[in-house]
Length: 312
Image 1 (tube, one colour):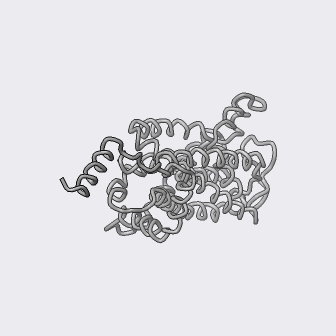
Image 2: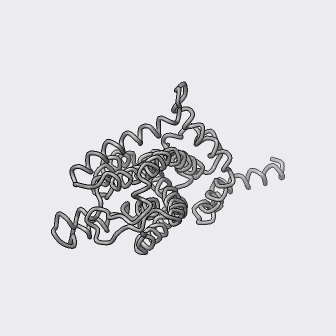
Image 3: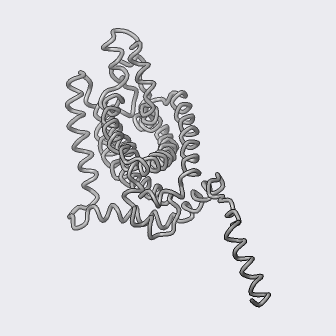
């Protein structure tokens, strides 16, 4: 056999017997995780357009279109506000705005949690055929929920206009010993409050979306548990009721309400919209939960970002 050919065969045989180790993968790094988020933000025209198209598609061939969102929220808030104001013996002029704002904010939280668990499952086709960061689908979801929130704010402004005389001055809320200052320029604090809420919505959808894509039992569990959270959260009732039923300072009942993180997320947005003073501990707890939540989401994004396309 010719000498050059023999040397090539010997080298090929040696390579098969002793294959070189493949280069170490560097996909599981925090740098890649941050790059995924950064690139997704740069594609904001993409997820912004897709989020708007989601709403248009949902109300396609409807006469009034997305206004059904506002009508549905207004009907629910009005019915439950009237019902629970009579059950708790509350003034409708202060309790109906309280329930309305609570429902508007709860709708945003509920959408981020429920739809967040299926954000990657629902976008299976795009994930397999569109080479884009997976965070794009999360931002699309949060943007869509933000549009829903803005639609529902119309109900709040309508209620505010009807009861402005009461809400624009000091008023009492249930069994709270301190009067509420009334709606003023502090209403602008709702803007950073909602921005913080939206930032939390991103990590919630990202973390639950990755876990739920791997373990398909998670979405029904979350959907069942979130219904319990609704009744445990001061939305159709307020913390002053706990003082009333206990005949004192509320005791352990108030403690349980404080342990509910959704309560603090509600307060940083709801309190300014109703002319209440936002206690500093609400901001502190929401800030702490934001740091912890984003840490967990980044760990999940670092470890399993590349596997989502295979799990769906």
